Amino acid sequence: MSEKGHVPSHIAIIMDGNGRWAKRRGFARFRGHREGAESVREITRECAKKHLKQLTLYAFSAENWKRPQREINLLMKLLKDFLIKERKEINDNNIRMTAIGRISELPEDVQKELAIMMEGSKNNTGMVLCLALNYGGRTEIVDAAREIAKNVRNGKMGLDEITEDAFKKYLYMSDMTDPDLLIRTGGDMRISNFLLWEISYTELWVTPVCWPDFRKAHLEEALKEYARRERRFGGLRE
Image (tube, rainbow, N blue to C red; front, side):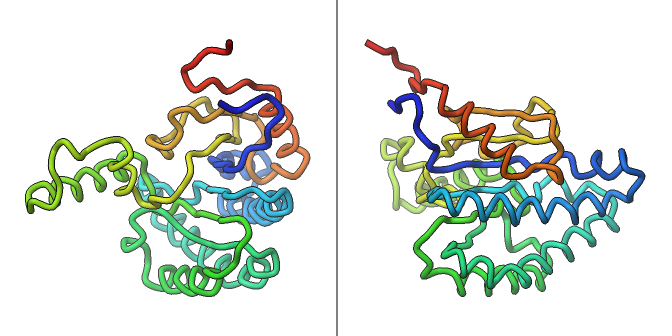
């Protein structure tokens, strides 16, 4: 059980509010997404400076395909450009890039740039930056269950071997530690199908600040609130 005052080793963020930020200012929705990329840059840099082990960002959900095709195309272009432009920043900060989700369903040019980024940063020893792309918590669990079922059917795994620890090995990133802190920007009080397995005992912190406005000061506010909390993981203090 962790004591009060601890700094989280893994932060996950639902980056919400880009569209609302743009609408309030009379801009097109894409302007909000573009400004949000600046927040990604600053928060990633700050978390790396604080020596977090991992930062996981909900960049594109499996449900986001329901948006207008024009917006999807712009989001994919923004993602591709980010992966190209941030290579030096990632390596200068000793960050290792990885991703979770059904990556094979992303556009081929995005997959290519993501692969280049991951390969180029694989030997970095600092913070892991994990992008959740075409990701859904339910699809992750279904995909894991499907792989386990195949192994049971083929005789590679027995039913009595299906434990929580064994199940975790079939998730998208089997060596991912559970997030200590989940931040949601934009004010909505929901999880939105993000890391459903991994956040069972994660501390939640929601801010009304939309993602394009989220900066170092807001991150510090979240960390101070986290430090005040006592995590018991279902147990009791003696």
